[in-house]
Structures are given as structure tokens and as C-alpha cells.
Image (tube, rainbow, N blue to C red):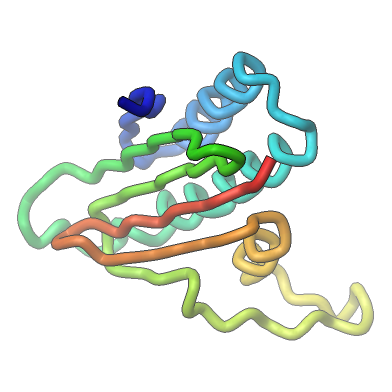
Length: 142
């Protein structure tokens, strides 16, 4: 039987990103992940959760449920899988358009580059809508 994943349930508020990154860094330290893996997964988790906290719950919860985020981290051979689930508005970052890079800093727009960073650092990024839940899986090879 495979080991149970490490899990964390959060309220999507101002402290969620900090709590989640501390949780992930604790797993990384315990498991001895390479620095590049820790950086890529932590940055990707930060980007995903920042978007969830900022945008996923702008509309009132239709089903009356409390806003929630669930994290699960598990190992599958040489892969680390980090699942981020939220019951906010549907949003598929794997289909999001990535803005062009600006030629100069003066031309650069703020925001919209989190998906680019995630795609750069992760080996795979998968999304599905499961009922009222967004399920994003971030995968890194070690």
C-alpha cells in the first residue's frame, strides 16, 4: 500500500499562502528534496494559492459552502505530486493565455506571469473540474 499523502486544509485568507509554503517546506526538509525542486514547487504553490485567495471566491458560494482549499503532497517514484483543490469559481490555469514578455522593464505589465513561472519550473501541470471543486496537480521530477 502506498504511503498516505501529507495533507493540509486551509481557509483561503491572507495567511493561507504563508501557512501552505511553511507546510510544503517542512515536507521538503523531512524528505531531503533538492533545492531546485523545493524552489519550483514552493514558487508554484505560492502563485496558485495567491490566485485562489485573490480571485476564486469573489462571487458568493452558490451552494452555501464555506470557502476551502485542500492540499495534498505525495510521492510516486521519482515524481512529487502536489494537489491543490479549492471550491471556488472554475478556473483552468493550464488553458490560460500567457502574456508576451515585454522588451523593456518600462513596458512590462504587472501580473499575469504566474502561469508562465509554473510552466517553467514544473514538469507537468494538470487541471480538472470535479463537481464544485477545482483540482490542480503540480508535478516535479526529482
